[in-house]
Amino acid sequence: MDRPRKKELEPIMPENALELPVDKIALAPAQAETLRRSEERIAAAAAMLQRIEREIRAMKMKVNESKEARELKKLKAKRKMLLSIHQEATSTYNGALEMALAEVPGETLYEKIRNYLDEKK
Picture 1 (cartoon, rainbow, N blue to C red):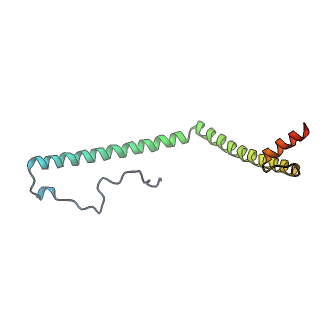
Picture 2: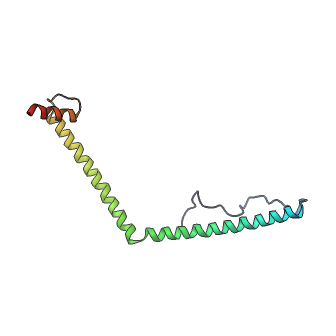
């Protein structure tokens, strides 16, 4: 159902991996024991991480399906629409002011408004 993500763990032992025949290599008993314990720890940690990843995905799905999450999505959509309306209205208002104050000296709208108010005094 879900596609694998980059952060998810790879299988514990990839199918095309080459296994080193540790038992056929001349190792001291302590080295062999260290390798064996390390392999067990790697496998156990990977299994626990995979379980936790599944739990995290399940928790995210529950959170995304909650009533609050749906309400949050609706509010964000409304906010986005209102921001767009606000921006468009502000641009229109500023454009109309610039046209109305075209004859007033000044480079920016702020300067034109200030000069216009100074003229009226």
